[in-house]
Amino acid sequence: MSEHIHSVTDSSFEAEVLKSPVPVLVDYWAEWCAPCRALAPVLDDISAAYDGRLKIAKIDIDKNQQTPANYGIRNIPTLMLFKDGDLVATQVGLLSKSQLTSFIDSHI
Image (cartoon, rainbow, N blue to C red; front, side, top):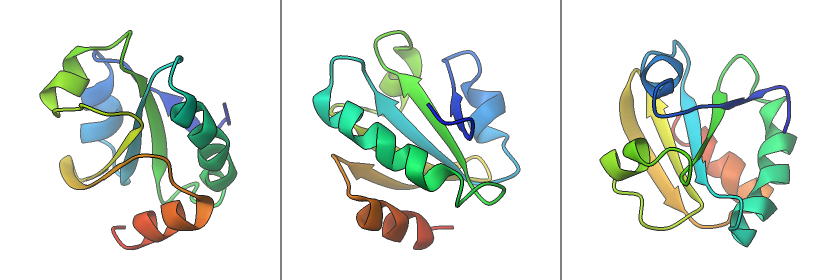
């Protein structure tokens, strides 16, 4: 995982995501999920390019079940973009690098 990607938990979600001074892209994932594993290098690739403008966070849904339940996560990978503590966009499924940057750019 890139140095620009933050691992968050149920207990750190509020501080790391909801109270972040910059927008946060949260990746809901699990170790057993092949599309999640395929998305990881894409997130790594873009993380440096958005450093300072966007925080990228990952939350393992198997180890942290409260937060995914709070946001109604039913499929993974699910990406949620938060700005100023508010959920502003959601994308479900595997994205290419260009699809992901387009999704981010249209919301930050």
